[in-house]
Image (cartoon, rainbow, N blue to C red):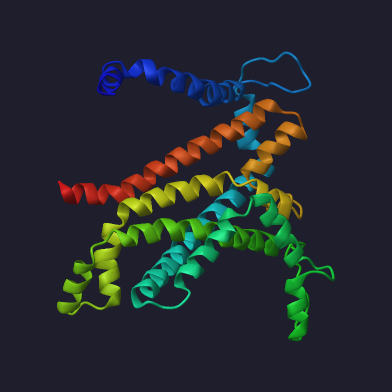
Length: 299
């Protein structure tokens, strides 16, 4: 056994090479090919193409794509803020409930995870049934029971975007809750006990102890939910399809339509590259603002 372990440590590349080949085949090659295609006028219908900046020029000069970009930022920014806030509140409540021995606290945490476990397509279908203006729409049925008029949750542009944001918050908050709850569990209890002895209230404990010690987990959570929200596709596709009009169309849906509706492979690839750049740029910003200050303090 020790002989095999020694061989593994002496020649690690030999054992890691198959993994690198698989990663290169299934991740690196498609990534670089998309970047390459973004600098072409490639079309599914045409066998030949030329290299140019046409796709990027079209992307940044098309008012419809720019409108989709604005919708994407509204969708992503609202989701990130609300998922972090609500996820933190639920995590704190669950931690307090577990500490106090409240009944069903563990069950509530499990139930909250169900929303995250449901596939995005199914989430969209479920909420489409709930928010429908038809007779089977549960939300409008409840509004009529209390004497209110029906609301076009998915038929009015502004309301459709708000409804889409709320559905994604409902689904994504569970992930933030679990991440933040795990971070809360790692904070030593004696720090809070010492703070109570010093006369610190709950808000002071949260801002002076909880947040500073959870910077790393908050950073990881921010990066993951940002990538997930920017890349959201299946839930929106099954809920609204990007409509009414283009009111709920985000960049992922635009890339899909450019490829499979307009057969414009170059523009679709350029939008995909833009999504990659946005994700990487925002991750760097998170690092500087969330972890940068703590790194300076440690020095």
